[in-house]
Image (tube, rainbow, N blue to C red; front, top):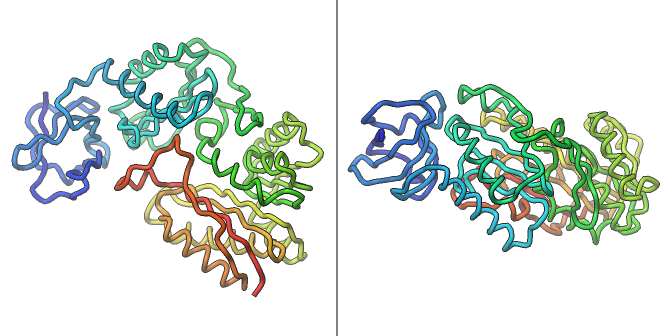
Length: 391
C-alpha cells in the first residue's frame, strides 16, 4: 500500500484526531498515487497516523478513515454504517434522521439521510465515491430499503474531479414521500428538493418554538417548504404567514399546511424576504413572532464579511417587525460563521434596530448531526431565540 509521510511541522489538529490532511502538509510519498485509493499515513518520524483515501487534485489531499491498522473493505463500511445507526437508535431515532454525518461518523465526505424506508446519499469526494457500491450494499443489508437515491448534484464534487449527478441507485421508487416529524406530516421531494430534500437538522429546534407561538401572529421568512411555520400553526398560532422567493417551495409549503389540516391558519406566499421585510417596516407592520431561517450566505472564507452583513441586515429587519415583548427566532447554517460571530452579529443588529434583546435559548443542530470538538465543519448550525423589546 502506498505510504504518505507528513512534514515535521504540521497542524496539531491531525495529531488531535482531525481527519483532513492538506496537500501542503505532505512531505514525501512511497508508492504510486492513484486518486481515490486508500493510503497509509505516517508522521515525519515514521509513526503511524492512519489510513484514508487520497486525491492530489483536491485541496484536502487525504481524508482519514481510521487510526488503526485495519483493512478498508466492504465489511469496514458495513460496520461503520451499522455503528452510526446504533448511535441514532440510542438517541431515540427510528424513522427519519441523518444516518451518516460525514466526519462526525468517521466517514468523511459521506452523507446519508433516512426518510422512512428511503435513503438519500451524497458521496462528496472521489475517495468515498469509489465505495458507493459498498455503501449501497450495506444499506440494503441493514435496512432492506424501498429505495436509495443519489443526490450528487452538488458543485463541490467538481473540486474532486467528479461530475454532478442524481438518480436511483436501486430499483426506482417514489421521489415524493411523506415523513412524520414531531407529530406532523411533511412532503419530501428527494429528487428536486434542496440538499437531500428536507432539513432534518432543525427537528429539535422546531419544537423549541412551541411556548412562543400560542395565540400569536407569526411571520416566517426564508420558509422553504414551511416546516417551522406548520409547527407554529400546530402549536396554536392565531395566524402564520410564510414567505420564500421560490414559488416551487411555496407550493410545497402550502401542501404541507393542507396535509396537516392547517391551511386556514398557515399561508405561504412567494416573495423576496429582503425587499418585503424592509417595506413592511416602513408600513409599521408588526408580528408577535418573527422566524428567520436564511440559506448560507457564504460557502468560502473570502466572503464571510458579506455573509455577516447579510445576517445583520435580515435580523435587523426582522427585529423591527417584532411587537414589543415579542420574539425573534433566527438561524445560521454555515460553519464559516462561528457561534461567537453569529451572536455578535445579532447583538449589533439589535443595537442598530434600537432594540433590547434577551436570550431565550441558543442551540445547534439536532443530535442526529453530532458535533466533534475540533472539527468546525460538524458544528455549523446556530439557532437562537430572543425576546425583543424597544429601548
